[in-house]
Image 1 (cartoon, rainbow, N blue to C red):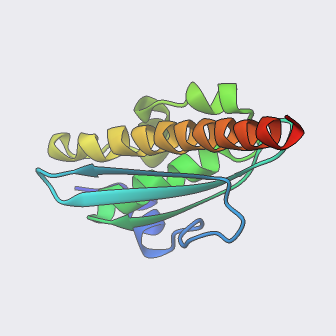
Image 2 (cartoon, rainbow, N blue to C red):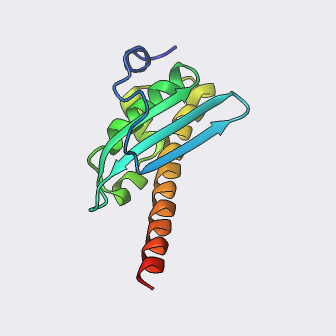
Length: 134
């Protein structure tokens, strides 16, 4: 049913947990299955993702997909990370049952949600800075 890689990532996730100092946090959920993924990113001033962590409430496929997504974006620029798709996650995990493909899609969505949060935070900081200088 699941590849050895999926089972390994589920039993021994490399990127599980929250992150102090995260400057990007994205959360996505699927009401139909009950999975919730929260991704934490630390993005440096050059727009490079230095670290990625996650907390996922969900099944084996959801946890494995989010864990693999974190590995895929570490060291990448924001633009490169936005190009990561669920197909990239699936390629490394191996096949998921058809009814679990949505977990890899949610992992992709969690990356986008975190990066969207990053831009919102930066916009607020810029606005704060311009008010102080006014």
